[in-house]
Length: 221
Length: 221
DNA sequence: TAATGTATATGTGTATACAATCATACAAGA
DNA sequence: TCTTGTATGATTGTATACACATATACATTA
Image 1 (cartoon, rainbow over the protein chains, first blue to last red):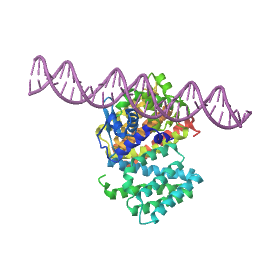
Image 2: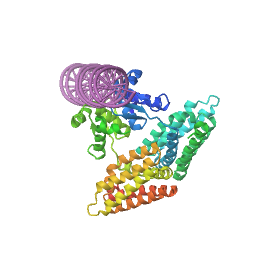
Image 3: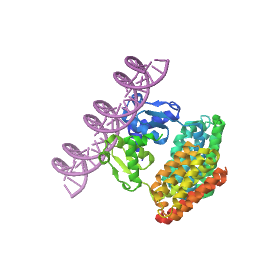
Image 4: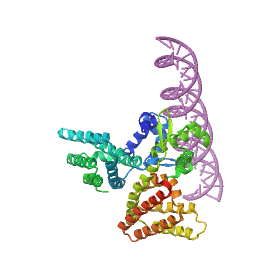
């Protein structure tokens, strides 16, 4: 389904601009000119336009007809709101996953957790990049396991939104360890088919991530 | 922010195609050819392409590179899922609204409720169109009153998604009456600043809408 | 007959051209 | 000086042209 985003120019332009907005390269109220962006990325206006229209739908860009496209960006409050919403929906997701998950998906979840533990135990290095990626993997599998296209879609969107924030979230090795432990508990509950526990744990897991984020200098939210 | 959607060709094409998918004119797995759509709507391929890319992001269309765009549509299960998710988020929304709502927004909510009651009491006619519109208005104001751009965005999206379903939802005059009464109670709780009650009532309100939907022949979900 | 290669047609992907709109600068008049 | 009108440039909106990918039909060959 997301093939397009990877293979086409327009898709890559979309991802690139989104990345640049989320990472802070383009700041609030910056004007995004089609020709300029096109030149920077080495493409014509057409794919840039398509990307900007998509970004508007995502709420990262505001388009004023016949005038221009302006960065809306994402504030600290937005991130906080997303985590609150996510905590509720990840709970629901875990509950549904406990009902619907397939054997194969269970295996994939196990693998993600085991790989995470392996990466941690490998000690010394503590590859934040890898840990973040595996964390994303765990959640993505969980989304699909919910059996709900809609829920998966929303949660994936949010996940993307806060990716920038998440990078700084797992840098703490201590938090990473706890996070993996929590993943393990969620997995256990889902395996046991304990919906209530799975929901509660997943809910708390996100709240913990949020609390950790606050500690790391996002307290102005 | 949504100016673009109204004034530009691309925006209107987007809305038109979305409407046609949600209303069932285009069915699951139908292929949407750019040239064909362009001819039908009297525009060139360019705005059609932009619209299709946006629809892909919304999940209503799947694009396979160099092949075509296919309708994904929205199943009964999708609608059911949306209502479950909405019931949680509308609860959260009402809670936040109870905290943040402005005097002006309170007035607008009151007005929406009063107009609804007026429409109902006018008896005889029972303008479903009007009632549905006012229901949408009530919720939209509530979304904004939450003070959360993110939450408002998500809920608006869902609202749009199930608009087709909603039309058949309020046709029952009895349900319309109850719905308005529930709106009134939610408004009261928000006015009193009773967050817990507002959340609970809004939550139940959506569940009631869903139950009503089931009664009306969506039981295969 | 079945399999494979080639030609052709259809549709998408991207670039470019042209039209419409908006912003700015500057000049004329009150 | 301030306002208003006009010209000019820049930028977006839309249409079209061309390049590329894919599917289908048909011919060729084993």
